[in-house]
Image 1 (cartoon, helix red, strand yellow):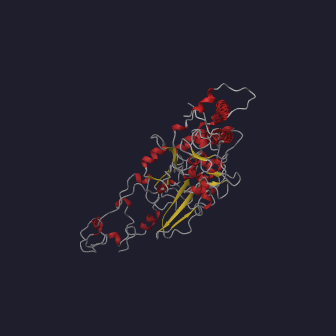
Image 2: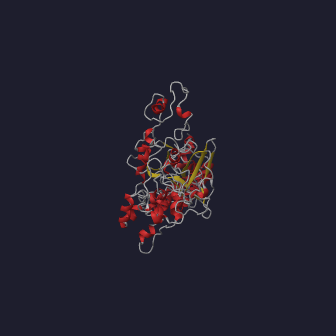
Image 3: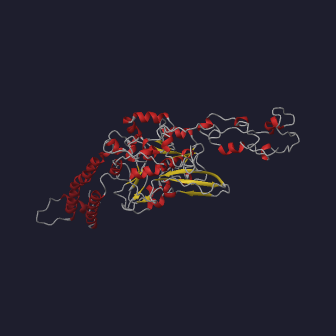
Length: 274
Length: 246
């Protein structure tokens, strides 16, 4: 350490009109920063506190941390009536055209030469016309599809702004106010479960009827399924319809090799279903 | 002991201080208030989605007033069918029962959405051909939608296996009930594919009637089980529901 470095610090402060030397300036600047720090903290805290007030909208007594939702689909019970598709569109204000669906029903026809035909006229909302010919048909069945609410969702990974997310109760949602409409998530979803809203210009998807399940109701598609082909409940608790469904059936998920960990479980799923 | 700082350090420090203050202020102003509360998203969005209006009230709400219809429905074959499957979304009716009247579909085009024959529907689900099934009558003329009962109780096996039943009706096996050859578990009638009936597994089963030493049925055609194509099972050549040999 050099001696001359210490000398100015020990000297008394110069008279006011004399310009600040460098050390005095740095000291003053550091003190100013120190004084401004609590102010900054206050500036950050104020909107945060305001936000917590805004966050009081969820139903009183609902605790998201106590739930983890999923859905079961029993292929053996689906009759392809399309009531779920119609109910979903009505409940969630999905555009009524043939290009936008939160949930839809596909008909698989597997012929004895191994050829597989899949169709879903208008998402199955008006049911399915009879097959032109049953000649050569080995088997046929309906597969209701929807967002799989993956535990490891690729759509959430690719969102550049954090507008789509998995809630603590396991539902993948879209923040319509924050979505910039870039459609990366639509590209990323391996199940084709997302669509682009033609007027709102944001990504749309199945919310598992989040506004219903937080009020203690079941999703609209489950409510209107006449044969009980759709089962709603909690994945990790024993005493819910879904847990029973998963115990009683040999359940599978769609595209398990993608490691998306879907939470829509299919029973009696044919190997041809993609 | 203090160090004399080089002159550029305090200047840079001042620049950094201004930049940091600007960054923090911009972040406070631009990042939504609840962003990052639970994760990389705006926590307030969860609440705004949860606050959307409900349109399907749920069958529990219907049953509070319409308990008579509910009791009838729960005793019938439509016990699993919710009210709003046919009557549409009725949260508005629950909120103001006298102002909103739920629609009741009465024409044939509605019932056939579920009950028209479609090859892709699961086996055993009640289906009709709307073209030939009383084409001029409304469904509700014969069937009460709250407690639907088929007018005729279907025959146990032919209700689902009509094709086999009609073929067997033309064959020499017409007088054999299905259970002669198939043992049908009770569960099969409830869940047909999960619990399947048994089929005969060996030549000796057919031999009970068709072996030259058999005595069960006098007029059955006889073969010598020991020498008659002994490398094959009977049903590899003969179709038991329509055996052709005289």
